[in-house]
Length: 432
Length: 183
Ligand SMILES: Cc1cc2nc3c(=O)[nH]c(=O)nc-3n(C[C@H](O)[C@H](O)[C@H](O)COP(=O)(O)O)c2cc1C
Ligand code: SF4
Ligand code: FES
Image (tube, rainbow over all chains, first blue to last red; front, side, top):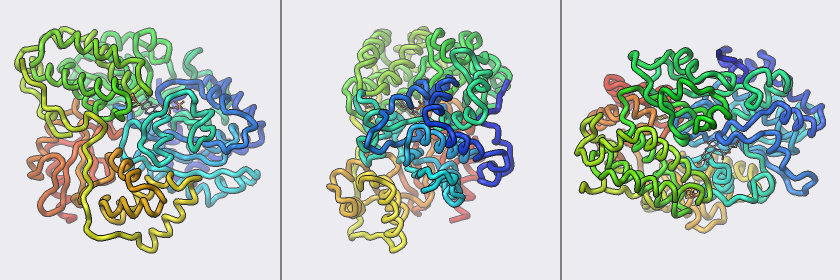
């Protein structure tokens, strides 16, 4: 059920140290990569079918291939360690437990694309993961795995860790780039894509932590070996972070295509207190919700989830039991997006606030049944009309909650109180 | 028809931002001046050093006052308005003095599903302050934050840079008492 490729070292004593990583066979793969033609490394990653693990699922080798060749400008790698999609905590585990595997993946990626400086953009709230990564980078410099002569092969590579300062939108790749340039993290219009014009006006690759760590494994074991796991179109493994009403929340590395039922009911020990699964958000709070029945029938890969009307996203799975009020849950989710809108686009800035307020009012037993249609007309105007997809990330869950749990919303409207939780929830009026 | 819940201030961009004044100019310690010079070598532009420089300043001075903004803008050859804009965009730069222990309760979805609301009540009662306030002795500040990527320990809170969870009412008591003892 679980397949430990990227999590292979998690149980090793002091797994985050250089000594432990080398003992487990670490830093023996990048010399192999550096002996290869960079194009061949890119081809190998293409052959593996690896898709970005940050949320969008874009093929990694193809992304690297978009970086222009023969340009005079320096090129950069930005590793996205901003991990702030609600429900997602897998990158934190990777950083805490195996930071050297990330560094080795960075070396391989930079060699393949011709990059000499990598920035790891790590969310500002992270303490331990930041300290572990910082110490690991220092160890790697001291050992000559970074610097002017990487591994004695004459390749120059620097890694700089850049701490964010609390803003979800800096996880969006162009928001991240703006933030790294020392500005507010407000996303840019695309195109141009970062591969052509990214940070400091130069070609830039942006990849998630998990993506880069998968690169290390793929180079060590080969594309064919990687493709033995997962499905034909969704090869490999994926880290899922599961939270909410399950008996054993945590991070699980599974082959793509595993039935969701197996993850929830076996690996996570099922729903707490023997309750029924009412709903499941499989890929982080931005993706459409599934009912418990739907979740029990779906497989966890890009294609099956798309067919079920949702997305794999970041693999941040949030499980809800039968006692959960869905109006209240949506209110909590919308509080987040209204807070995190960067304010550049009117449909997002206004829309996230409006839908939050409408759902707040419904949650408290106010409003009318017409609010449901009003909500849907606002979300319609938010989708596909903005610079980045944060607006869609607020609109999609709203639409799916309303579609799948409409009765519950109708029962709230004008009822004077939440029919499920009773009194309205104090936190909704808290100054935020 | 029921009134709307009072809209909070963050609808336009992020939290309303007012920066307090310290009353006197600031300067990095000799050691931090060295750290700052080293920072500059890691980026192709001076502007890119804004966030790390502000972090360094917050470490040394505790919070970001108007004087710190002016100092950082001089160091980096940037208009103070640019630095102010950056400070106000991010939630982790403090624009006023904070308690020694900053208790930040996650009120995002997984933590709320697991009883974060009850924990918020416990914290308010135990500390005797509301959100965004600091105790009179300057020991504790209380805030709510969004998902901290630690949902497996829901309901959870961050105290300075340490994560704590899953929290129970009893656990909140113990946590606050142990911090008080540490002083
Ligand atoms: C609002 C928003 C927030 C995002 N947050 C993150 C994040 O925290 N971490 C991440 O890796 N990707 C995040 N992404 C996706 C990135 O934009 C980008 O697609 C990703 O880092 C690319 O890496 P990958 O190809 O390896 O997945 C976010 C996207 C959006 C629209
Ligand atoms: S969609 Fe929202 S978060 Fe994205 S750029 Fe526009 S205002 Fe900012
Ligand atoms: S929801 Fe609280 S840490 Fe993720």
